[in-house]
Image (cartoon, rainbow, N blue to C red; front, side, top):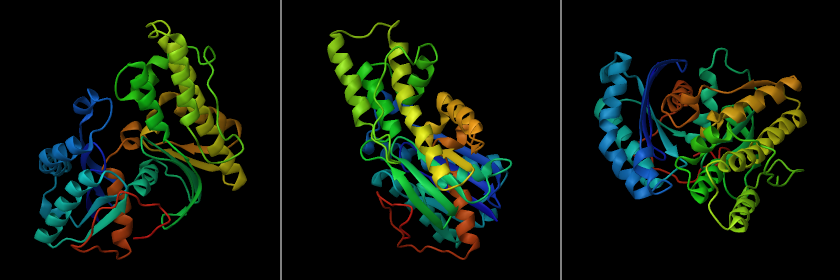
Length: 335
């Protein structure tokens, strides 16, 4: 089945054409990073307006790169949630219009299940069941994935997501946006043991990143002046280490508790080079297979949405013109 995927949950406008849920023929992403950079974070109203401007050209580009026409498409998969309502509605409205005009089957996809399904684009893909860490700017959750319609939450953040903590730290230190990317690069020049930050909820599979952020804020106040260019790498290396450490430890702990030897790491923060290397090292020591998609499939993209869409469409799932966007959508909740 040739599926057109559409993703617009936050600040990337994306479309992809995927065959049989495995072969990515195109994966086009229009980023708004430069636009939101001057604000230090995503501005929802601006994001939705930019989606409106970009969505048609992005879909046309995806079709062109796939060597396909709209008449060749056999189904449409679109992100329904969770995400920013204004942004979601742009992709959803476009998908519904195309499905209606071409009499194509349409299915709404959970953005989080899309991130998990990105691992199925790897060669080889992970066998089921596996433990998945979904870590991004909006989510930090650990799941037991028995199948794509049988997912159980094992742990979740009690406050901020890991990616949000990176962005807020970068804004506090005034080092640029997006924070996760900037911190990843600067931390390579620093000593992660030079400045120590706390790890919260060590005995639980849940996460909390408010403490590490407060610790950084107190450090900045105590400093009494901006950190110099020479000091910043050590600070961000320590901050990054504190976040990466709990992500790796808790995910592997969950895998061991469930007696599962396969772990999937996905979401935008999974593109972080230190997180990837720590998982590969620590999981290897514990004889656990780790699957981390290439960075282009970690950040928001439409190929992952098409993968889930193909699975849903192949089971006969169809959504109608009344399909609406949802800002919150736990994976266990079937809508």
